[in-house]
Amino acid sequence: MRRLGSNLFKLGEEYAAYKNFRMDKFAYEKSILVYFCSSNADKFFLRQYERTVYSLKVMNIGIIIIFTDRAAWMNYTEHS
Image (cartoon, rainbow, N blue to C red; front, side):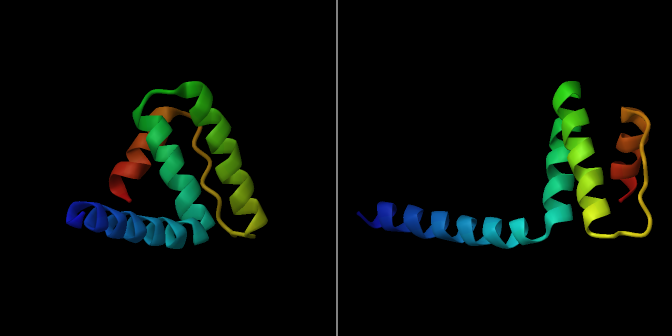
């Protein structure tokens, strides 16, 4: 019973962290983009890339870095 309570508490903590993370739209979109890039899922990467660029435009970010290929994106993520 104690283990069940502990697991429920951990789940609640993870949910709270996730909910706070979701509030930052760009960080959320970027993390999904990094995941697809690292898993070599080109089809999903390109779709997520378009969503991320769109969210930057919606947020009126002045500077938008456009990556033309996976290598440029990987180089950027390694240094950021």
